[in-house]
Structures are given as C-alpha cells and as structure tokens.
Image (tube, rainbow, N blue to C red; front, side, top):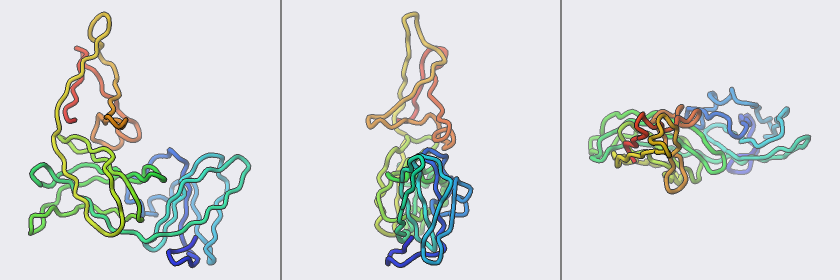
Length: 239
C-alpha cells in the first residue's frame, strides 16, 4: 500500500468483501463501520499487507487511512495466490442536496455506486433549510476518491432518479432536483380476465429496475415487486 506520493503507507486498514455482499449504510470512508465485513488487516511499517483465508471468488478490496482511500475489484482462483498493490488517493468532500421543483429542500435516500466497487453506501437525507442567499444547504456529505460514480435517489412523492452521473475531481456540491413525474396504470389480463395479485418487475429504457419502494432495504437487499390489485391493475404513481 502506497500513498499518492508513492511512499509506503503503514497503518492503512484494508478489507475484502465478497462481491454481492450487503452494502454498508454509511459514508464509504467510515472504516469503523466496515470492519465487520469478511476480512480486514492493517498494513505494516513498510506498507505491505496480507489477507489470508479467502475462498475462491470475486472480491472488492477497500483500503483507507488518514483521509485517503482506494477501491478495486479482484478475482481469486481456487488454490491461487494474488498480489494486489494499493495506491491511495486523496478524498474529496462532495456535498449532496435534494430540492423540489420550486427549489425547496426535500428528504429522501441517496444510493452511491462505483463502476468497479459496485454499491458503496446509502444515506438518508433530511431537509435542513436554506442558506441566506436562497441556495439549498447541503445536508449530507460523501468523502470520495476521484473518479466517476452514479447516484440513485428515492424520495416520497417524487419520481426516482436512477443512474445520475457524479464525476468527482475535487470538493464540490451536487444539487439533485426532484419532480413528481407522471402517473401510469398497467393492466395485466390473461385469457380468462384480469390477473390479480401478480408480481411485476418494471424497468426503464436503460434496463434499470424501477423501485416499488422508497426504502433502501426494500430496494437493494430484498427488492419489493410491483403487484396488481384484484382488478389486475397496478398504478405507478411517479415515473
């Protein structure tokens, strides 16, 4: 493990998480909250580290120390050995705010993803007023390494925001504007009439699942399907 200057990084906390494991519902640099995951070690005085006892499969390797962070995805073969060098990057402070159509603060859940590390974290945002110059006051902060990320936003009474791009190159503020969207009804009928109490999966044009809930647990860990009523109709209130 080395720092941005290439010098060894002793005392860095590294851990490996099996791909597909449940996410950590905290800021991605909150290492204390991540140490309960599969394996974790600390780099030595010379920056070297060793993680043993991993079964074959794909892992996300996370490393952090003193405001620096690194993430990568690696694959370990059965009976194999893998060398993975970690280069820590400076973290940037990215403030997130949710606002409504008229600029008013909104509450909701923000889900953060990285193309290599996958699902990183989710945060619950609550409105906390406005700045004196009428700009929305950021109410939650991510500390992120430079790179490209995506955000999903789930908020009551608003159309979900799916796959919004977040390009981190320095400290900054990201304001996400929410709107109510458009309501739609789908009717599911079979040969003998309406199909009641049937589960449906709805996806947008990009193939992303449209969540049936604004709660992260029901969206990420145990996705709740859309379900038709007794008349075979399901209402999608915010698209």
